[in-house]
Image (cartoon, rainbow, N blue to C red; front, side):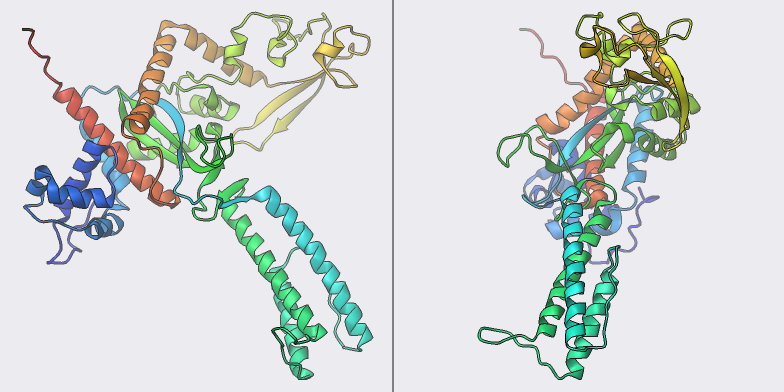
Length: 483
C-alpha cells in the first residue's frame, strides 16, 4: 500500500493513515457501503475497529480528509493490486470477462433537470428577441439622432451583447442620464434598452454554459452536471416512467470477482464497450479472450474491436433472439428475415429479387463500414405491399456484409455447449453481483457527485465486494453436524 499512497504528508498529530485505510476497507467489506458517519460510529462502538485504531476515535472529517487528500488518486491502482493478489491466491479464470451494465441513481436534487432540446428552442427564441431589440434600438437612435447603429448578427454571441451594454452605458454617461429604480420612477428609454440587453446577455451566457456542461448529451442535472437523465425502475416523481439523473456503470467480472468498472454518462451500453476494454487493458496489460455480454453490446464497431484484439465473439446483437424464432406471417416482412442467400440475392416474401443500387462508406464510427443499398422494384402492384412497406418507390434495404459475417459467427459460438454455459454464467455472475450490491446491501444510489467522486465510491464498494468473495472462498462456512 505504501507504493501507492503517500502517508508521509500527514501531520505528526494526525491519525495513522494505514489504520484509517484498514478501517475503510473493513467497513465496506462488512456493510457493502459505509458513509463517513458510519465509519465514525464503528470506531466508537465496534470492538474490531477499536482494535485497529488502538482505541482512538477519529471523526468523520478525519476520514473525509484522508479519502480526499490521500486515497482519491491511487485508489484505482490499489484496486488493481488487490485483484492481482486475489488472482495469485485464488482460482480465477481471467481469460473470461463477464460484462454487464446497470444504472445507479445520482445524488442530484429533484426537478434540477436541463433538457437540451428545450434549451436549443429557448436560445433561438431569445436570439430572435435580441434581433428585434437591436432593430428597435437602431430606430430609436435614428429618431433621436444618436450616432450609433448596431449590426444584426445571425450567430449567438455573448461578447457582442456585452459590447452593446457598454456602448449604451457610455451614451448614458455622455448625456448624464441617471438610472432610476422603484415605483413612481420613469426610466429613460436608454436605461430600458440597457436592462433588456443585460437580461439577454445573462440568458445567452446561461445557455452557453448549458451546452458546455451537456457536452453532446440530451440532458443533465444542475446539482450534478455529470449525471444524465435515464430511465430507472422506480420513479418517485409521479410514479410514471419519467427519467431520473443517474450514471451508467459497466462492470466486468471473472469468477464473481469484480475485475474492472467503467462509469459513463451515456445511457446506452453500446458506446461503453470499447472505452471499458481500453481501461481494462491499461490496468492489466492484456485483453481477455472471451467477453460474454447481452444484446446491448453487439455492434459493428464492437465486433471489429474484438477481432482486432483477438477476442472471441460471444456478444449477442439486438435481433439475435428474434432470429431464433420461426418465420410467421407477422415477422416475415422484417429486415432480419431478408438476408442474402448463397448466390448473394435478397428475395422478399413475395418472391421478388432486390436490385443493387449503390455502396456507401461510413467513416463516422471507429472502424470504416461499407454498406450496400438495395431496392425492390416490384412493390407497386404487389398484393403484400401494405404489410411490407409504406415507401412509395418500393422497399429498401441496407446490408453490411461484414456485420452479417460477425453475426453468423456469434450465432455459431453461442450455439455450442461452451457458448450456452458462458451465457448462463454471465447471468449468474455479472447480474448476480449487481443484485448483491443493490438488493442485499441496499446500495443503488450514489452519495458523491461528479464522475470522479462516483468512481471513487464505486471502487471502494468493488474492493469490499472482492474482499467478501475472497473471504467466502478461503473460509467457507462450516456445515452444522447432524444430531
